[in-house]
Length: 106
Image 1 (cartoon, rainbow, N blue to C red):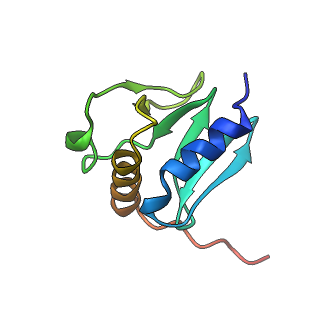
Image 2: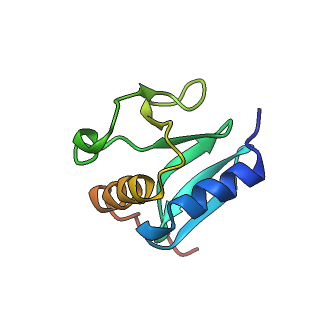
Image 3: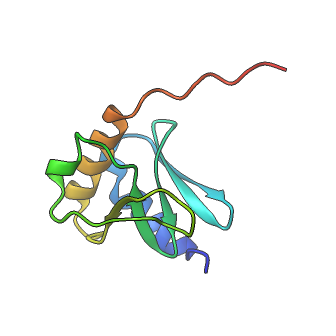
């Protein structure tokens, strides 16, 4: 089941205080980006952030599960209505993840 575009936009808007937020369609669902770096995915209208040691103690509840079959477990974020909390989690995830590798020129 794919995510509803209205829910995807709502999640992106809720995270807006973290930086430049975008959601890009990937395999029927969406990748969530902060300042050009992928920080999580939105699958079946649920937000999953990449797990990091920096964010783990900031979570209100630890819910580690794969966003889709065959995926590695991620932090499932159930509270989508708290803008400050979501923005803080996305910002801290962004800071904890390595910079993306530069794309090779063809």
